[in-house]
Structure formats: C-alpha cells, structure tokens
Image (cartoon, rainbow, N blue to C red; front, side, top):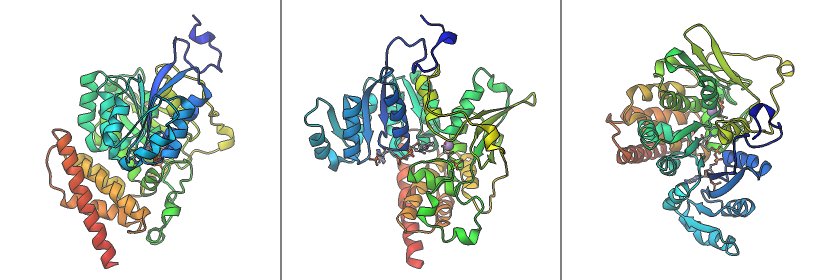
Length: 406
Ligand SMILES: NC(=O)C1=CN([C@@H]2O[C@H](COP(=O)(O)OP(=O)(O)OC[C@H]3O[C@@H](n4cnc5c(N)ncnc54)[C@H](OP(=O)(O)O)[C@@H]3O)[C@@H](O)[C@H]2O)C=CC1
Ligand SMILES: CC(=O)[C@@H](O)[C@H](O)COP(=O)(O)O
Ligand SMILES: [Mn+2]
C-alpha cells in the first residue's frame, strides 16, 4: 500500500482508505449541503451517497438524489411527499416526508453523516445519527445550543465521533489535535464582525434583511447570515465551543478579525497561541471532516498572505451587538436558558426576514424572552421540546405586540 508521504496530491482519498466512504447529507440543498456535495462530485471514486434530505425544495433534492445515486431522499414538509415521489418515480430511490423521514434518513447505514439542517429542526436527525455510533460532521450549531449536554452525553454513550464543521470549531479541533486539554488556557473564537461591523446604532435601526444577509466574507444561508449580522452567531458559537471542547464560558474569548483568515485560536499555558488559517470557504473544514482522520485534496487555494497584506483585530462592541452578551448570560444560567435563547432567536430572525420586526428588534426580543424565562433543568428531550415550544410562543407574542405598537 502507498505510504502517506508517497501519496499523489491529486488523490481524493487518504491512502489508508480501501473503499469508498458511505455518506448521508442532511440539509443537502442548503449552503453547507451544496459545499459538501461539491467535494463529493469532484471525487466520485471516494464516496457513496446513502441518503439526502431537504426542507421543502423537492426539485433540487430530486436532482441531487439522481446525480449522486442516493438510496433514500426525504423532505421535511409532508405536503411535498407526492411531488418528491413523482419526481423520482422512474428510479429505485426510496422516498419519505415529514419529521420521521428525516430521522429515517439519519438512521440509514452511512458511516459518515453531515448534519446541516438549519435550526433546532436538525436536533432529532442529528441525535439519530449519533445514536448509531458513527461519525457525525456537525454544522448545525443550534443542536448543541439547544441540547448541548444531552447531545454530548449521547455521543459518549454511543461511541460516536462528533467532528465540528463550523469554521471556528473546526479550526480549534485541528489546533487541539494531540494537545492535552489541561494545557489549554483559553479558546479565542474569531468573528468577522459581519456586514454592520462599522455601522452606527442609528443606521442599524433601519437595517434591511437584504443588507443583513450580505455577509462580507462568507456565502451562507439566510438564518446564519442574519445571526452573523447581529453577532448572535458568535454567541451561539460560544455555547457550541463550550460543549464541544468542555471549556468554561469565562475561558472562551471573542476577537473580531474582519478578514476571516484566522478561523480561531487556542492559547496554551506556556504562552503559545496556535491558529488555523485559510480562505473563507467552507469546503476546507468540510473536507477536513470528510477525510478525517486523514486529509483529502480540496479545491480551495491556500491563503496568499502577501497579497492579503494585513490581518487586523479588534474587540467586539457589546453596546451595538448585545446578542453576544445574551448568549454568555444564557450559558452561565444553563438549564433551559440556552434552549430558549436559541428558539427565541430562530423566531425573531424569521420575523425580521419577514419584515415584521426591525433589525434591533431581534436581540431586544431575545432579551425579553430570556428575562421572562423560568429557570429549570434540561433532563431529557422532552424538556428541550417544552422549553423550545414555550420560547417560540412567547417570542411570537412579543413580536406581535411590537408590531402592533409600531
Ligand atoms: N453556511 C455556512 O457557511 C455555515 C453554516 N453553519 C450551520 O449549518 C447549518 C446549515 O446552514 P446553511 O447551509 O447555511 O443553511 P441553508 O438555509 O442554506 O440550508 C438549510 C438546509 O436545511 C433544510 N431545512 C430548512 N428547514 C428545515 C426543516 N424545518 N427541516 C428539515 N430541513 C430543513 C433546507 O432545505 P430547503 O433547501 O428545502 O429549504 C436546507 O437543505 C446551520 O445550522 C448553520 O448555522 C455553520 C457554519 C457555516
Ligand atoms: C463560516 C462560519 O463558520 C460562519 O459561522 C462564520 O463564522 C460567520 O461569520 P461571523 O464571524 O461573521 O459570524
Ligand atoms: Mn462559524
């Protein structure tokens, strides 16, 4: 067999792979799903696709299922079942619709599962994959925000391998490789600052959904793009990092780095700080998880630091971007608070995208929900669902009230 250092650089698979890796992609029609399948498309010899899922976009899902020869395709919206069945009628691809069909997709025999459904809708399918004890590449950060302890306990109980896809967490995962956790002083999550990094509060009052989704560096789905604009994304990532790496909140910093070249850093107790760098393209962290524990050839160029010229840093502005502080507070309070923060944020972001509340209304509404949220532990999935439901109802009623008084 080829030795790793003799490997042809253009070969997709790490040299130790003897056969294609069977994979499923949950959220196949989204930004992360598309980047994942772009890598698979470039290296058909290395992967076999078992299952693909979408929310409602049956046309794209059916086209992808055909292209990649998937064995199962599932759509979340039950009303789209007939359309999906018809679109794949001349194939032997099995189809399903509804929440249970997403879980079935995750349950099918793939050794690697990409969890890239947006929002807490991704929790049950991600848990189903984790419970099979396979490798789960986790993009869906809301899963860890709304049920972090529960998810990490299930990972340990079922011997699953959880690989972080989120660029910051993937960077930290790479930088922690081979290091002892007890030697870590601090995690430093980098943040681009989003499209409104230099925008005054007065202008933020009138920010439109179109402006909010125009991220300066990354091309992403609408929900995470708005999260980046409010900086709630970094708050969610703080909670995600706490669960993934078991580091207390007070030892996780956020540093604004507008170029998004350094994806995060780890400071060690001997004074060293280690970083992972790359161009802002999710195909790099996704490729890392696809080939893990090896590496595969990827399409992304290395960052040309001479032409980039300057990497700059600044502290986050808590006054203009209160969402970060809200997430820290929720993590400190623990129990139901992060679950409610996440649910309130999902509803408030959608209300902003639908033109029902203003941009600053997003963190204001989340704060109001947290202020009213009863404390209590999360002992199981039922508690997560109840806290999620309660926060969604409260957020909707606060958003309605805000609209009525506007
Ligand atoms: N995009 C990025 O660069 C990054 C994303 N992430 C995280 O990855 C996740 C996905 O993000 P992204 O790809 O940008 O999002 P997109 O909005 O681009 O894609 C979301 C995917 O989830 C599907 N979906 C939507 N709603 C539901 C639902 N209720 N049930 C089941 N499936 C649903 C969508 O299907 P359909 O197309 O049919 O609507 C689509 O396949 C998020 O949690 C995000 O925070 C993390 C780091 C970076
Ligand atoms: C690509 C990725 O991981 C996003 O979460 C990204 O970090 C968003 O950028 P912000 O740093 O602006 O939140
Ligand atoms: Mn990120």
